[in-house]
Length: 353
Image (cartoon, rainbow, N blue to C red; front, side, top):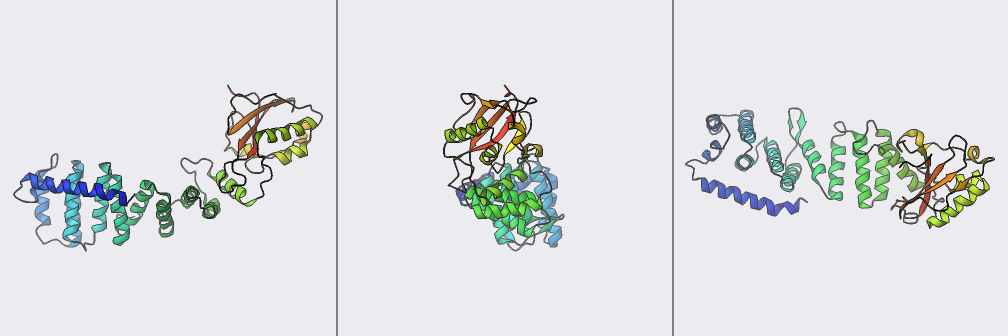
């Protein structure tokens, strides 16, 4: 992603140069002072201070920030980028250059040029020491944005690992480790994913946006990766035949052996799978003793190539109807079981319409 923005960066830089040439300004500063929507008198005074040669670094930084704010408030991001680029080029060893480049990156993002913004965030990390402004680390801000912007899994992993290593006290460690595990999964690095999820479990302190089942997901991933998976079947027909035989015989032990040993749920149609009560393991014997359990002759019409529902009844007087839920195992970390069928859960009661 970072390299792909170079051509666009060159194009925009050329546009800025053309714009500067076309203004015909008597002074290079006039181009900025005449920014539409900005306070020209204030900018003229600020540039006067900046060019006076009397400012110490902290004072110079304060003036540059005021000019930047004025251009930003006017939404003149082209002039803002040009001004700050000139500041950095004029004083390449300036103590606040990391902050100026961060503002340039922000300005490009405001122009929907995130690829170019990423170039600057990466440049700051690689070429400039960290700088703390108003209690906030510039490098921390860059890593956060690069993680958000990166579309490359390997690249995003490196940024997230650096964030975790350098700023452990500034991040939600649980969230970062879980998302790191997700990224490793995307790359097919299963061992690294397992390690990240194992580190995540004791670090979890708050819900992760977009991942309400993070704890359950991580634990199941670890379990699937580490235990023997002897409950899967090559075909759905084979699985249903085994379940049907056990039900007809009222064989609770056989039913317990057939069901999935990871992630098996038992819940009503209105319940959420992330609800802890849905993950209970119960004794089939309490529901098969003295009962004649029957099944529909065909799968429910909502079944498809990846999941299936089978209506059964006769389990208990209170809730006679159970829908058995079957699905294909989605676990590419283990090719031997990935794509095989498992009995994954039970829905109590008649199916929701």
